[in-house]
Image 1: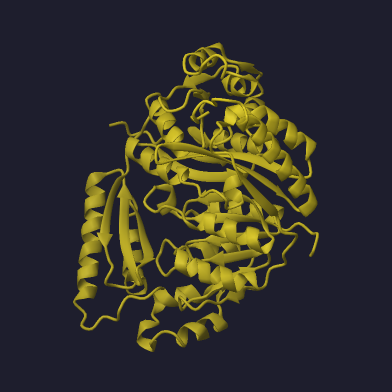
Image 2 (image 1 turned 180 degrees about the vertical axis):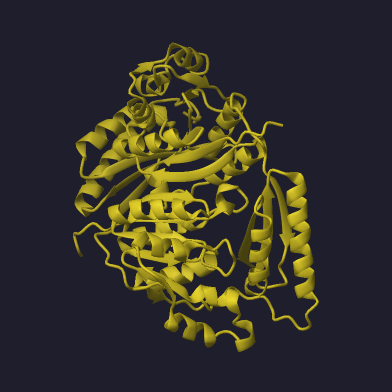
Length: 254
Length: 254
């Protein structure tokens, strides 16, 4: 296993997410996907369909992380401006890509391949296609930026295709310890001591609330299996000691 | 109605969102909530539990937008560092706020109010409490930054409390026109012309995919009711003209 750490950011492009009309489901999907293949998602941003906003965010993110995944804005309508913005961010021309056009010709009837749809074959010079089985127009990759659709089913197919071309790094090992019966405030101090003692791991405490009940989970993450196992055992022992105290108060939100 | 435009950003703080472990549900909720009260959400970012990342993002966003809403990182555990990061971003001290402590004293048994829980009374100097009925510790507001919990039920209660203190602006009027039976690529060109002709509105086309079917919706947004109504009528007429063409191909993703 490579010991390199590979980082990424997600850039969601779309007024509809910021207006609340559409709820983003791509960030969570990409986060989970990248964790599984050994890429660390370090940041995500959501910006509107405004060229200078897309360019500024993309340039900030692509300079800082190994990969940037964008979603949204690659359809046939006037508000789909991602390809133009990416070309501008890279300082290259945008052209009708003959490979993309050929691909679309094979999937559309010729009478359906109108000017609006042909816009979806436009890509920055130097792009590689990110093909997929779901939608006729492909996504594309230029440099370390992977440009994908916003519709989750299409995005997911494009991510599968793009993933094959990615360099991946050491995977995070993740251990989750259920601490539901104990409110965070009761174990917080002891957990902080464990977090200090096992600095090679990252330890988080995550409350959630569902069906009228608060639940806490403690998560230990790290790249060295032995360290993660040690930290996990320390957390479990700490929780057992707290459990042993009689009459613990019922969990409530902290 | 005020004609002022009031803008906002959301800053989600938490490793658990970037690792994919927890799916963010707060951005969409806040987006929809702010739209309803007349605040435009312009950007959202997700950053990890790393102080310098939080400080940098917060300073970028609070300089640029009327309000910044943060979620996450205000619990009792060692990984809850939002209050410290906000104090650092504002360049002020962090203190145990006597009002917050009094509030927590009224909600916790004295034996439960241990050192870890008292951490949740720490706030940057100059903060106002953002009280709520769900969790004993309050959120807080300093300047134009509103600091809220990450657990959705708690965040939502804090947002209700904070909303009463916000300046709000002209609300967006939003009209949605169903275009499900027509693939985007068939109306994209005509819609682009309408978007140009009605520049006081923002017109978007949003495909989605569920139960094996692609659906398109066209959304017209603007602050002048008459202009939105005119643009909406133009879109409806355009779609009717396309519908009138015999044997339209079945919708498929563009």
